[in-house]
Image (tube, rainbow, N blue to C red):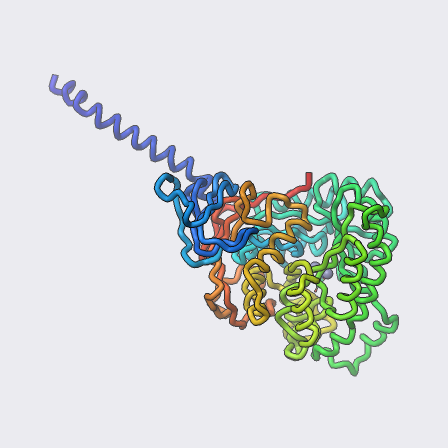
Length: 507
Ligand SMILES: NC(=O)N[C@H]1NC(=O)NC1=O
Ligand SMILES: [Zn+2]
Ligand SMILES: [Zn+2]
């Protein structure tokens, strides 16, 4: 009797205990998957700040995010402070901008993951406020030039990307005259094609001529997709003889500069414009679009592009932060971290690039993040002619653009246009590129006024920080948080535990 009584008395307590245990276990397991993708424990919340960069200007207010999308944007006065039960993250004076979209990065995965790879590359992107990255078809092994090689890319990206990643396909002589192969590649989901007008430095990615490009454009027209072109054309047939001249000072940057003069860019663009006219309204490739990557020459090449736009060619151009931050005069002897193609030119050219960007003649920016292993940068030997050409910068593009652009009066709206809105359009991403209702909640939160030293104490998220030309610089503009499809994927030095970015395939 005594025993029975005890049982009855304990029963409610036991039930309560079991229920709370069940609740705890259940709640934790429900939270687990979400919490692995995000450093925030909720998927319906508000972000507030005094500086939110919207297409209608910078507002003080709040952005409501639910299940990965932006569902409302309100000014401070309209914010329904009292009626909400959702969580609020207040960023105070920090700037909330659309996440950056980098349309030009080489993540070298699969096949050259010792150079970078999807995990380290997309962690660098997240740490830099980049929420979408379009991966170039070369420097991985194999290059992305067929449906089979695209599948290898997509498989390599699975569960290994911290932000969204799309893919450009390669236009090479092997597929240029094979419309059905190009169509298959486009049907399989590449966002457009990319080709080179000079040797690419990668054996399975040979260069194309104007005739290949014309063919490519005619296919792209049917898909309304762009062709991105590395526009440099070798001009001097004696160049190789010159390169073998052993009286050359290969540690001097000016030696390298002379091997790739502005006339290479000009010649390539002139050649391209013979086919670019096909893209005009009523032209045989109407619907296709040409995009010149990493313009360095701000003289004749730029004049040609401006003229083409006036004539109605469907053409845009990007430049990269390294052409806006550095000038040839200041590159130290032997410092091959600065080697890239086309080369960084003189200070006067840099001024003209800024002018063209501010005036809207250069449409957008991209990183051209092109890392390698330190051994191939030949940092000890410092040979500019033999070192790998490519700048490593993915994590720093926002503070670099801002820090070097401030003296030209760069605005937050311009940053959003160059780094988000226009790149989204180029890559055909209608739900990205702006803080707008219905868009993916892809955002960067940053403090333009915060300065930092890129020294050894700074957490750098790339495989080989030693090859980055930005190390040692003082920059302003600190990324506090990066939100990708509503997930807080990066916060003050830390990444979400799981790689939950989505591969972007064209539909
Ligand atoms: N293959 C490759 O990444 N090349 C890039 N590097 C560079 O500096 N310019 C390029 O086009
Ligand atoms: Zn290039
Ligand atoms: Zn590139």
